[in-house]
Image (tube, rainbow, N blue to C red; front, side, top):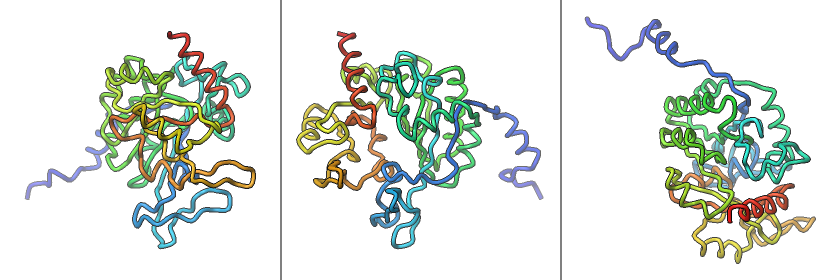
Length: 300
């Protein structure tokens, strides 16, 4: 009886694994599900029921009907080290001296600092995730720097090896020819959005192969979109981030609340052809608005 050609021997598996390089880059991947409701989403992916929320504002792992929620993981890279040096929001790359980078404020800044001290293998991390995970790449940091080429290769190989994963990210280094070439080789389950300093660069980005782009705009409260502001974005050809749309209510401090919608609910940033517009938000939103306006004036 002839051997089954579809059954791999131990030796064959060892030889196959030997062809995959080992990677070691700055950063880390989270070990468990994201509890950030704005990332993990509000709706059960199985039945559509709204997920229960914890008192802390995070999302529970199961819906009222017992189904598991979206399993979202995240990778953090160090700000500055992995970013294009001409990023308008980088400033001096520190918490005090940044120019509006959200990843240098709040808890994300702590993760970015840890990412500079840690090293990990993105290929191993991604290929060992549970089936069907969604992955937010580069919550902090970007895809260039001293180990940028190694990081990009690891991401591409892992996402090809794991077609069941669904990854998304943003990239300020979209003008880098090597990054644009890498982007063109990515499988459909890994979608990277070109993050623009100037909305006017959208056509330039698309000419380089970036099918989805994103930019930031100022809003009345520096964090969310009113209905009128969202309509204005729509008229200009943009798509206002649904997770930043107001629901008409405020909390005890008078802060405007947003509709129950998260990244994993719609994956809106992964839709080809869209120009996603975010309201400048976070502790550094005013700095971001000023820095981006200054950058646009420099180009004129």
